[in-house]
Image (cartoon, rainbow, N blue to C red):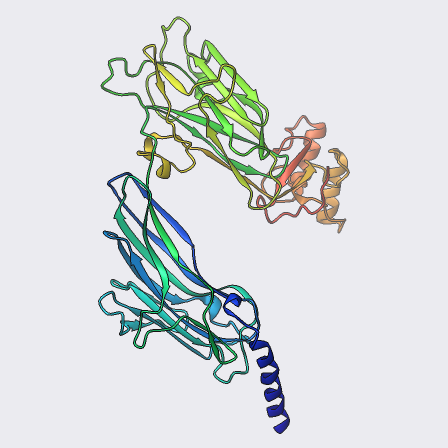
Length: 492
């Protein structure tokens, strides 16, 4: 027993030698997110509910505890409230694999910043639905016996808060308020300190959360809007999406409904993420109207790495027009995915006067008059458009992991022939070798590998049966398609 006591004393003495070297530069207290922007049209009310948190950085071993206060600092005319407070889950077991020795987190009403309105549970449960909360304090002792201390850590989240902000937006951007560290809350006031070697050290960084109002400059609603479909695929795979047009002409216009043509461009937003492979009106409304003949003038131009333009004149004699309507499918575009990392994404957006020489404008023609399309990029119509229902919508494309293999090549030799049908039967019924890519053997496309796939291959080879449903040749089998089938070995 005496030996154990001696070891603890020696350890504490050794730690004290390190403690003497710590300064305020070794500790940070920061609010996250550091900045939040809320938007609304000038004179309108901007409001938002923001999930915030306090994170602690310690660049030295041996932090024994801390305390601080937080207080809302709204600008004039702005309403702010902390509606929810909780001890962050990351802080529940932050040292020695156990809970902190002592935690006191309290919240205060705006009318009394000296006496707490209530405590925050120490088990991670939230004090929620707070109608009037303007401040929070926290005091922590890592280990009451001082055996454990907090080691070097970055971004330890110690409090979760929900902040509600509401106010009128002016003509220029302005600060709506802050949730800032303070030493003015509690009685006696809670100090902002890091406890190290028994000493109180004030952290150099005490970064608040800043909330800003900005006037929302939104594109006005338009009578002609462009909706672009998105998709996802693995690197070098192709995905087809449709461009849909909305001809929402003005009912008060005597020429309403006499749509005579249109033109527009759609562009890849981020260079190098995608390429355009093909575009056609086949299978769309534009390719099947006028008795299946399509428009008199139909100009589709591809711009590698950039996008595509489409120009249409329904009838060169202006005798045939299209009734105004929404949801008109106009173009099927095939894109090649060039992204190669999990989490990558990009957009295809309407682009006016960007592609072509002369540049193609985004317009529809009614009664000989050009009506400009929405100016919205369409990435977030609710954010950049005064009326999201009458603005463009961009297409979101994402990278999806996958493996390339030759469709039907069950034995992995890169060919589709009778051997593949036999290989599947041997695997299923004779204990034969497993398929290097089961997805390639699933030629029926039902996400099952069974005898029907072997029969399908033989029918295709010798009995004039249909080709595999995935097509022929080397394709990318996406990881999230038919997850019950493996595809571990690339086959092409």
